[in-house]
Length: 290
Picture: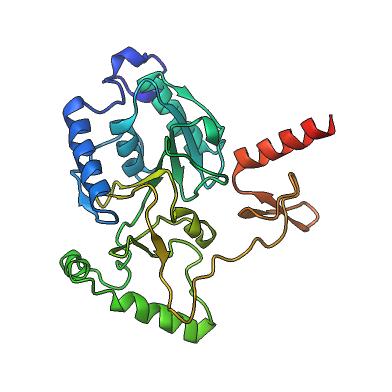
């Protein structure tokens, strides 16, 4: 196989989507099972992808198995379309599928994301593929896979509630600013990937299909469209997603997740984490002024 870095390869030199058809069928069966049992971690073999570990190989496997010639792909990394990870993955899929890509959320049929859910309303015709480093929500509390499988089977999630209680007693709120566990359709607790807690409510009753791929841990799980998704909380202490700390210095939004930008003078400002959403707001604002 010609290395991807050689610069001599053409789309026809690879099977469409890079993975062979048998592998893709195996992954599709795992995806179907994950959709049928929301929140359940379906084991997969874990196939090699031509990029370093840590770049979201689980999400790439899912995307490779599902993508077709009529799809339009969007790739974001922490909300940005232009980061090196997002650009590299987008270029990879262009090379091995020759499909159309976009930075506009509304145009995409498949959105592969690292740790963010796009701002704005998603649709029934979209699939969001999230890259997951650690799929087990109880991994930091219980290192044994056999033990966590039993706990899921018996719905024994006491340790999650105990940890949340200790955090509330210690600091008054949950420590997890990201990857806050969610319960899907009243059954399985799942890790939503390290998305900020601000994004957790977007998973509830969302018309899009969410697929989670964990390459290192060899797991796939799903949140089907219009699922009931509840963040870990107590009845008398509701979950709080938090509010933006200010407003975007570029588009003026005060209802989106914001990144902190430090200026040369030491002053802090904020910009929308979702660069596409921010750009579209500025386009609309300039069109209205014109």
